[in-house]
Length: 75
Figure 1 (cartoon, rainbow, N blue to C red):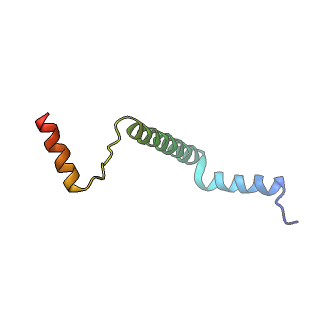
Figure 2 (spheres, one colour; figure 1 turned 180 degrees about the horizontal axis):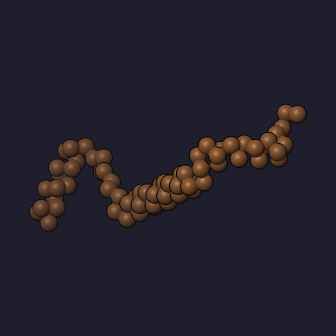
Figure 3 (cartoon, rainbow, N blue to C red; figure 1 turned 90 degrees about the vertical axis):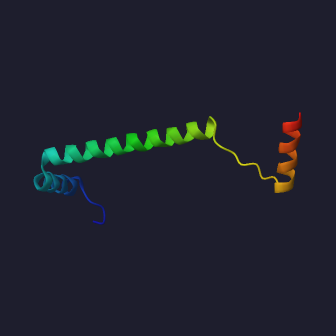
């Protein structure tokens, strides 16, 4: 009695189709698919940036950074 039978699901599906119409449901599902594709593309772009030339920051004290810059200019 706690679980819904197949007839409950069929009636619920019928009500949803009647309320929203078949075209609206397919339109919503198309929008969901586009959103998923866009999300996957964005995640792939983030991975490419991290793998190819993601900017790193050297954490050197200012004095050491100045010394290494002077040394590079002299050599």
